[in-house]
Length: 161
Image 1 (cartoon, rainbow, N blue to C red):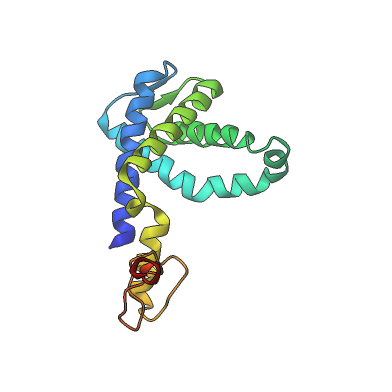
Image 2 (image 1 turned 90 degrees about the vertical axis):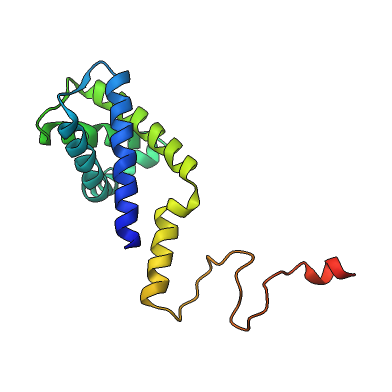
């Protein structure tokens, strides 16, 4: 259920980000809301499947450019999504490049606004703890109770002195 929640939230963020992109980049157009929703889903799927492969294949270029080439990969993924979805149009690579930059920035702002409880790591950790209830990992925060039932406040001894 938590993974489905993460996917749904990420998809909604993608829809909003794509809507912002279509309003700010003249070379990116969408015919209707159905195309916006489908294109956001296509971008999500491509970012989860094709983008990691492209990143690994272009790793030497990414290292040489200190990560700037990742922007080109984002533009390619955006351009590919436009080719896949009917009603989603990108006129050239540079429009896709700048659209991907704005898309990433809007998505980042939404993820920051939503907070850490909507991050993939948080949701995956919760999911992992549900399927393996006895597991402990290093992601426990201050205030979590250890197994002996005592509060986990390391500064309590100093505060009482």
